[in-house]
Image (cartoon, rainbow, N blue to C red):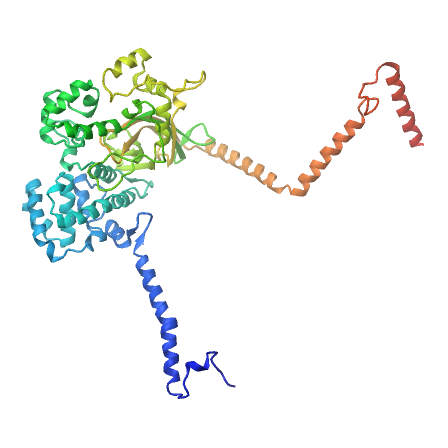
Length: 554
């Protein structure tokens, strides 16, 4: 038996010794080389995972290394984990950057002289150290002093840090035994880091000072061109937080800012920030179990809340909410930044310091449930329904609301024109509906939970609302009652599925025939007249029908 290869004869010369070499070359070029290229491409593409395009080695560092996300990790420890990403480790550090890195090191020591006594900070890989120093310089709002040769690296570090923080947050919120809840403390810290990164805010400003929450000073320090000296001068004017600054009359506020060192050119940036600063209002919040009146132990519970969002810019004539997302005002962040919100749900403790929408249990460092949301619908409702905001925020009449607005253009104008409320409409039913599910506590009792809504772009937008739930013990009577409901619902679904299409069609035909028979028995003279027979004529007609029926029987 002869076996041949279906190839053109001109490929092979008459010399039979060269033919195998040509065949080998064809196999290498046509088969092996493409296979090697495809394998290399797949391995390279497999380095990245998820919608943020994070390298898999980075996730391994964040999960299973000494720099991983810890259960009790605080805000000041977040940058140490953040810069250990493979994206920063593989960042090139050419020798030409030596002098610039030395200058950057001196800058960092001016901000944080305590680092001089920490040799472990300086002994890290040069690319990791560079990323960390650039990050600290950005948080100190000293980007202009960074050497020009490092500006491209600064932009790369800042743009990559936000998706890396998102992945760190996902790791902190992973469900863990025994109850399937995430970690509370690192979730706090990571969200606070997002705010600081967006507004170039020093981490020390988030620390509590003098018995007051750290957010009090951070609210003002996040404003463009603000520093500690500006803050001290404003306190002399009895301005201690952002709300007090926004509620001041326009002339008085401008005079206070000017005397605090803000120039007339910088006032425009401050004005833009204040106009875009959001205010979230929670109209209602409740926990329910679908189809049940009570919440029992380990029930899958649905949390529902309605929220509204407003800004001082809504007071402008002809303002409209457009697009699918709002863009945060962050002049020091090198790229456009979407304004996102995260919701959490938890026990009442620590309600004032969490970021997002979250249900949480502070006693066990647990996040019961959380969700990242876009509040464009809430902003649309807040713009169209100032009457609802008036009732929720002020609980006052229109006259009182006008007094509350005063002469400040940044105060929320609840008297602007909007749609009138319906007669039977409840305030608690107005706003964007937010839903998320969690497992009820394993022990029966009364629980005080807290809904917390915070932004990933601004400081001072924290909103919380207490939610009390009662968890009933799972008794045998409740279990049997629920089982009976489940069986009845299953039988109903099964009976509906068992009916074939033919049976349904037959039922439809039978229904038509019955209607026809009923029509035949109508007491009308004819289809033409449509008049009802009356008196003796009707009785005679009926007798004729009966007689006709007897004849047929015979």
